[in-house]
Amino acid sequence: MRDDATAPWLQLTLEAIEHAPEQLEDALLRAGALAVTLADAGDRPVLEPAPGQTPLWERTLVTGLFDAQTDIEVVKGQLRRSLRAPALPECRLIALEERDWVRAWMEHFHPMRFGRRLWVCPSCQAPPAPAAVNVRLDPGLAFGTGTHPTTALCLEWLEGAELSGKTVLDYGCGSGILALAAAKLGAERVWAVDIDPQALMASDDNAAENGVEDRIELSRPEELPAALQVDILLANILAGTLVQLAAEFGRRVKPGGGLVLSGILEQHADAVQAAFARDFRFAARSSREDWVLLESARKQSTRL
View 1 (cartoon, rainbow, N blue to C red):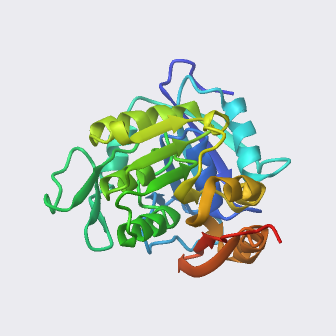
View 2 (tube, rainbow, N blue to C red):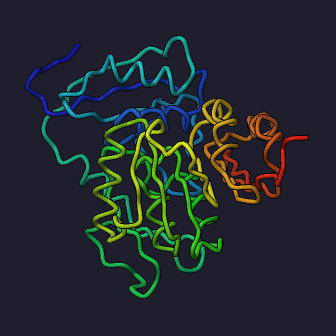
């Protein structure tokens, strides 16, 4: 499978055929990719495009960069589960020579503003607005730096919400970026949940880096307190998984509390909304590129 057993990096490439490039990108990041590259048939790379910059190529190759010790068969299994696909498109795996790939990626990662006062800044750069709400975050082993449209939509929603004294659940936390932003914007207590141990480790490190570890609880889904209900639940995960979690989310949000769902392609938005219609009343829909954020409130009573 590998060209050189001593090479420090593995590069897994898939062609976007039955899935959108953004879906493959998200799935690779959730499977532990350090960075994701999009390229056309002419091999012109783009390192995670900035918001509003979507490559429009007839054929798109999506490549994930992994540590050499990664079990690629496990990664493929995670990709199949994330994409809900019985089989993947043909994969190409090659080994790469030593290079600081993450630092190369960071050359394309600059401070970003969401709304009026929320910034996400890499640790190697000074915040452009020191008095603003600044989340310090570097690319790493877990999904979420703010450049993807779904994450940007969630961050903009958080920046405009009244979070003071509220409890928040970030379901599928990845890097913890939404949990960090919620805490820094005034939430009293935040639960950050993920099935991936690497995501929880990254979220823990990022919470400490941002000085909010005392207000963020990290856990796997099955470890959440059985009676836990929150004022706001955010989930930036793929549509199929959201539908499967509809009943769980109905139990976790207080009556009258808010539910924010993202990670949804436009063609799946109505189906996702229908899956939650029993317990939630949808109020707003935001979109960016081909992605949608759904905002709703838990009904005061769903037992008729």
